[in-house]
Image (tube, rainbow, N blue to C red; front, side, top):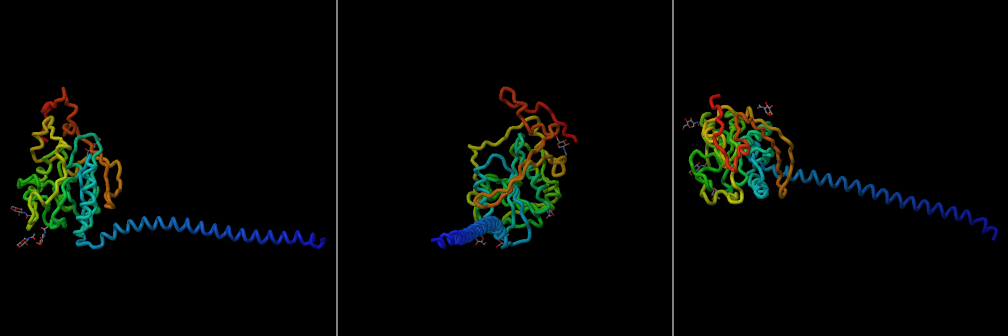
Amino acid sequence: MGSYNGRRPKFLFTHFLVLLITMMFVLTVILTFTLLTTDHCKCHSSELLSAVKQSHLNKHILRSSPYKLAVLVPFRDRFDELLIFAPYIHKFLNNQGIEHTVFILNQIDGYRFNRASLINVGYLQTKHNYDYIAMHDVDLLPLNTNLSYAYPKQQPFHVAAPHLHPRYHYEKFVGGILLVNRDHFGLVNGMSNKYWGWGLEDDEFFVRLRDANLNVTRPENITTGTHNTFKHIHDRHHRKRDTVKCYNQREVTRRRDRQTGLHNVNYTISSIREMTIDSAPLTVLNIELICDHKLTPWCDCNDLKINGKHKEQTRKINLST
Ligand SMILES: *[C@@H]1O[C@H](CO)[C@@H](O)[C@H](O)[C@H]1NC(C)=O
Ligand SMILES: *[C@@H]1O[C@H](CO)[C@@H](O)[C@H](O)[C@H]1NC(C)=O
Ligand SMILES: *[C@@H]1O[C@H](CO)[C@@H](O)[C@H](O)[C@H]1NC(C)=O
Ligand SMILES: *[C@@H]1O[C@H](CO)[C@@H](O)[C@H](O)[C@H]1NC(C)=O
């Protein structure tokens, strides 16, 4: 028994040692596995991210031309239209092999909507990285796949031509969708900054192009017509246009503007957001336009509201500058 008693601590010690080694081994295995798994997870998620980015890039591989297009979309409060537009135009342009980015020019200041100034801002923000722009309404979808968005080398190209547009059929119409290369847009000093509220800024731009001897070209050999070449997703009853005129806006906006353009559009970019809608990438520029109230007091007609009515032409603006 004595020997038994004598061996007992040694037996216990060996037992303990084996147990310790086993536990350490198990612990090491667990730890290693855990570390490997976390490492694998981290690695996996970043791989996943770059794979997503890569898939966006991969879509750009089958390019038909070396030119890059900035799709400039003047925007305010049209979220439902954007949800349809962004994935649609991304796919349409990819099918034509056109490398592009969709820029949503979101006007966030309190002034009236100024489509032309937003396009000036979009151009200035993108001109170093893109060869041409598409001035693009958010509510107009090209249906006919033969409508080309190719680089307009010689002349601006008016995709939404009067003989195809669902609503506007006058010969000088250049609104809706217009492709202009970087040099031509710079040459005409962009668009006028005087057009606050809806309408006429594209007619003034037509005169700028004509004065620079640029003739707009248009799609040919399109077999579809005014009802099935484009889809107009604008609901006129739901979204009222801002057609108010105050001060002498009516008079001024009928004239060719030689005072304002790319060189003096005044704004700040408050933020830039990257988003995707149904995996279609887009860039939102949140833009605050700054109004020169002496030059264009009609950027805000509300200060003239008297008994709910707008007093027109109460203040004449000096036109002879
Ligand atoms: C596009 O043009 C091709 C060749 O001219 C023609 O065969 C095809 O029908 C056109 N497609 C549409 C949708 O107009
Ligand atoms: C544009 O058209 C006008 C009149 O038809 C012509 O004189 C002028 O040369 C054209 N410009 C270009 C660049 O083709
Ligand atoms: C349109 O069709 C005519 C006649 O078939 C052809 O000569 C011309 O090149 C075509 N234009 C375009 C822009 O495809
Ligand atoms: C832009 O607006 C700011 C703030 O109102 C003003 O100080 C500045 O002179 C304006 N710049 C131009 C080019 O009009």
